[in-house]
Image 1 (tube, rainbow, N blue to C red):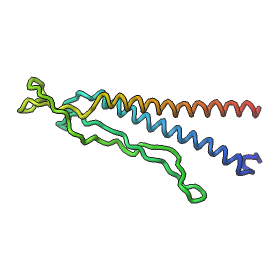
Image 2 (tube, rainbow, N blue to C red):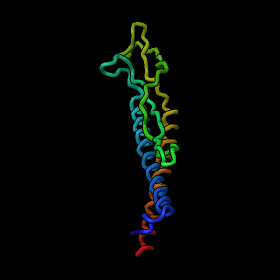
Image 3 (cartoon, rainbow, N blue to C red):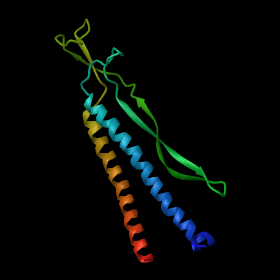
Image 4 (tube, rainbow, N blue to C red):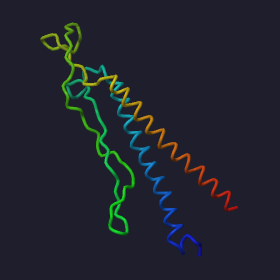
Length: 153
């Protein structure tokens, strides 16, 4: 039998390493959803009429929630992050006077999406940096595992 199964020390250390990988992996998935949502917001920043709704595009935002797991000692342990839901931003639409626009109302006002492109770009930079940081964690783990396997030869 290996020393990993005979002793709690090495097994616990190995579990911690893989737990870190699961946390980074879940964060990659969550941030990817956030990036996709932000790019969708940017792409629809000037969409004045969404088919089937009769309204302009409504900005979406991602809500995250922790992934918790009950440990053997009865304490909850953080195991990662997940997308809880994608929320529709209920802030008001931008009103622009443009009587020549095909979606203008009887007053000549066009409703534009509640998307602020500058805010979306700032959020996108933050999300991409977070994604890159978690990717770096994954790559570091791969290098560590490769070195450990080479030492075991």
